[in-house]
Image (cartoon, rainbow, N blue to C red):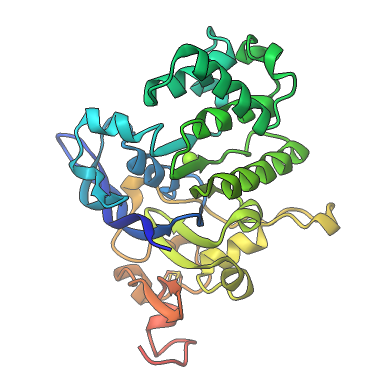
Length: 330
Ligand code: SF4
Ligand code: MG
């Protein structure tokens, strides 16, 4: 299948009159039609900034300072605000962690779904109403007729997320971006929303960028996984390959922090330390302060992203510096 989305050497920085702090460093990835790419990393790793860049929704102060975002053959970085609006909702749609912030509390949910259809497609109010009802049923919202007239606060968290999914899918976008869509929900509802996303992805053929801090959730839904740390891609591989053979010390830490359902009493492992803030990021490998394998080279040189085995990329000196544990060639 052909590439739907190609992000090449994307750089984003927070810029003020005094300084420019890089937040995303040469992010590159491609997404084929119907494929799910999981992006995993702790908060502050740049996963949300990556997805917001693709939607043209960067927060104030952040700007693209390099690279390209090519969606269906068009470089979005050259788009005007008006052109972006046409892409959002129609070609690419997004689901956020907290539907309450994305839904209008004063408009019945059915009409919010219908309005999305009317903004992007040449449909009458009546047709939009019918499309919305149909979509509500497809995403598993019960008693659609009655629910249509209810307000966001009258719904449970799981139902609100279903409303968001209906809004995102009503214009059959080619690309769906889900940023921590299940994080605010309890475990049972989380599983329901995940399987709904899987079903909808199959039905619509949309490609999906699925973002989460939780590798346990990412592995359920992704074909490929990209691990981000402090603005860098540190590892990328097909999901099975990554789980069987995690290479980057950060990925190994994330693997250890997946909750073990068979040993619920076992305390959850957390990687010691935290992601360095933008201002704290120095010269070398961004993981140095938390890495059990860090050596002097790591402090001074950012490792490059290299392909270790077919389609398995790693950014770590352990794998590129022949003097270390790694026995392969450079
Ligand atoms: Fe650890 Fe060095 Fe690899 Fe960074 S480059 S992850 S500090 S071993
Ligand atoms: Mg985030």
